[in-house]
Length: 76
Image 1: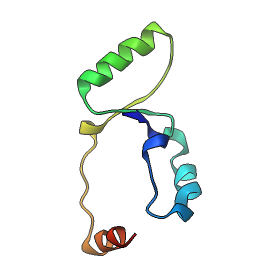
Image 2 (image 1 turned 60 degrees about the horizontal axis):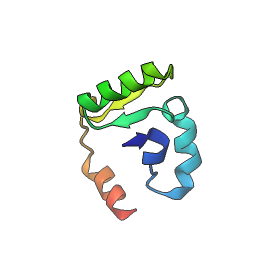
Image 3 (image 1 turned 180 degrees about the horizontal axis):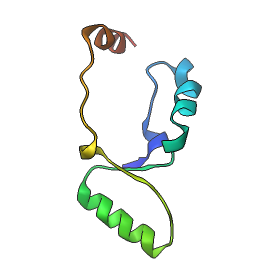
């Protein structure tokens, strides 16, 4: 998948800096789409002595938005 900072896109470009400042601690996380991919990445990173945090997408709970927020997202 990639690094978190490559994958996030604010709804409006004027919020780009604010979003990146708010998410500063996790911008360098590696994002993977499965537990298997996380295991492979972890093994590779250990072999290379590289410390990285992994964000596994299926482990993130889904969130539903209110109708008002959904409307604003669709307008952007």
